[in-house]
Length: 129
Image 1: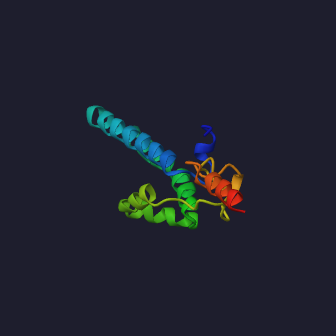
Image 2: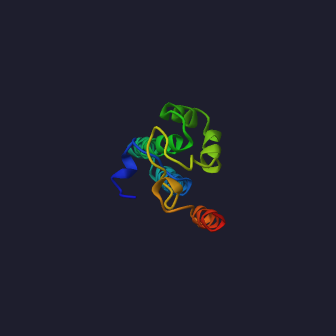
Image 3: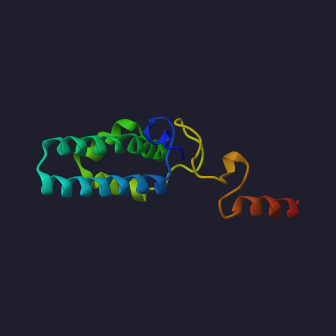
């Protein structure tokens, strides 16, 4: 994933990429809060909002992967427990209205499952015929 894609609202994001973005934001928020406690500079508080805002596009793309509208991202910032389903629920394995599956090797791109089950099933069906 390109760093520019990190700020895009279009498309879909895998759980792994979303979890990575969430961990980066949590680490940055921890560092910002530590810096604020040491210096009490008001400008540091503003940076906390900028870092949190950077998570919004990743949240929207992850919600797209589940198959919901990106507007559900509002719920994640009102109720932080909403991040748990975003980390746990699997995305749609095939393309949906928000784009192709971000997971490589799925049947919609002709490569089969990530563990090769679709290819093995296809070979088995051809042998039976």
